[in-house]
Structure formats: C-alpha cells, structure tokens
Length: 158
Length: 158
Image (tube, rainbow over all chains, first blue to last red; front, side, top):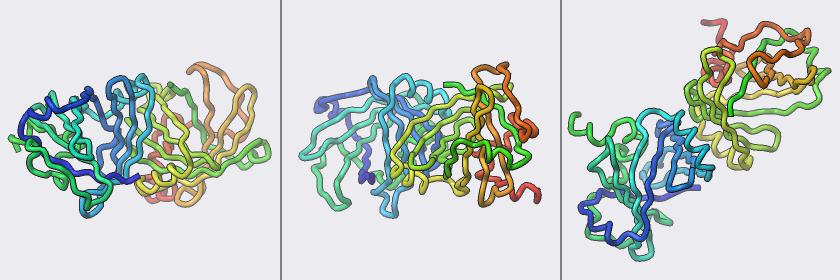
C-alpha cells in the first residue's frame, strides 16, 4: 500500500477543542533508516508493527505495510528497539472530507506539534484550518524515526 | 518467545538421504544489526516476518518473534530489504526426539552447509549424526544476517 501524506506544523492549541478522539502513543524503531523503517507502536490498548520505505521524489508517496499485533507482544518488541522511544498524544479532527491527525509530543520532543493529512492522490485538495502552519512534508527532520534519534529539544543546539 | 538453538557445520551430503522434507527459502533483512534483526522470509509458498534480539552471554538463548504473512506481502517487503538476499534450501531430518534443520546455501554463500537443532533447555542432550561437524553456535559469522552482508565466498579473501 502506498500512502500520500502532507505534514504541517501546528501554530496553536485550538485544535484540541475540535478533536473527536485522542490516544496516547508510544513507539520505537527496530530500524530507523529512511529506506526501511520498522516501527513498533502501542496506541491505546492496541499494538502495531509498521514498515515504511523511502518516499518518492515528490516526498508525498511512501510504501507502507502495517499489521495489528497483541499489545503484550508490542511491549516486548519495544524493549528491543533503538533508544529514543517516542511518546505523544494523537488528536483527530474532522476537516471537510478529511481527518487531520495532530501529534503533541512529550519528553525529548516536548514543544513540537505536528499535523498530518492523508490524501487519495497527490493533487487532491483539502480544507486548511487556521491552526495549520508551515508545510514540512519534504523536511525529513519531522519523520518520527528522525525525531527518535535527534529529538526536537536538541535542534536549537545544532 | 525465547529459542535455544545450537548450530553446527555439516561435513557431508549424507543428510540428504535422511531428509523428510525440503523447502527453498529466500530471505532478506530490513535490519541486520544483531541487537534487533528484522527478517523477511519466503519459504515454499508462505511468507514470514521474524524479529530477533541479541543472544544472551552463553550464545544459546535469543528472543524471537514471528508472524506468518501473505507471500505477496513478503515479496513486496523483500524489495525494501538491504542488499544480499539469502537463497538456500532447508532440509529437515529426524534425529532421536529432535528435528535437525540443515541449510544448503547458494549464490554468494555457495559451499556453506549449516545444521541447527532447537532444544527446550540449554542442558538438554541430543543425538549427533555422523555428518554433524564442528559446533559454531557462538560464532556470529554464521548468523544469516551476517552472511547477508559478508557472504561465505568472500571469507577466504579476508
């Protein structure tokens, strides 16, 4: 399966009042190389294993494979992961025909809030809420795998 | 799950006459670091995704997690893998209460034949067929993930 996603910075907390669901997410990486990331995720009481390839030249399309796995297995696999487990809350907001996912990060990535919108094609249009800021789709620093190794709090130091 | 395996070199082809099943295996690695290998395997007409941790100090016990996946998905995931896909035939031979798995390698690992026996505990005894040679359980060069990056044919050159 191929996913088309556009990613944005979020400029205020206004999205929280519009959110219809939120889930705490913990995730780690068995591989964080962009060509083949392997992610272990616990979202609420469910576990997931997700494999992604590198994005195409436009940066919008990326191979993705995902399986739900028992949360107990996900917990064991998290112990194997590279250091830098990501901790965040995912909020979901309806916007026109789309759902926008907003991740508020904690721990070493505190201060970062990212929004993602999934589209059916690279040219599909979408409504843009006022709290949606700069697009960062092509900036690989905002990949969670990158944030795991180079957390947001350290960026100012670079 | 934790697996206890002992690994041996094989000294002759005599095992082939004793084998009750054989399957061609192709496998690649999404991660080949020993602390967290992620393997994609096609065995006959089945696909598997397997995650292994590093072995404990004795070298015998290793965390292992495996899920069967559709062969079409395994084929797509193989395309994402690191270079150095392993190609081999696995023979299975009954030996006393145990089954011994013997891997005859092709391609860049031609000339290598490895046997593996799975035990319930580190002290469990087992019958040793005459074609079972030197034990190499603790030699990490015989990990398939290592062979994928440093194939057997190149060893003589080192």
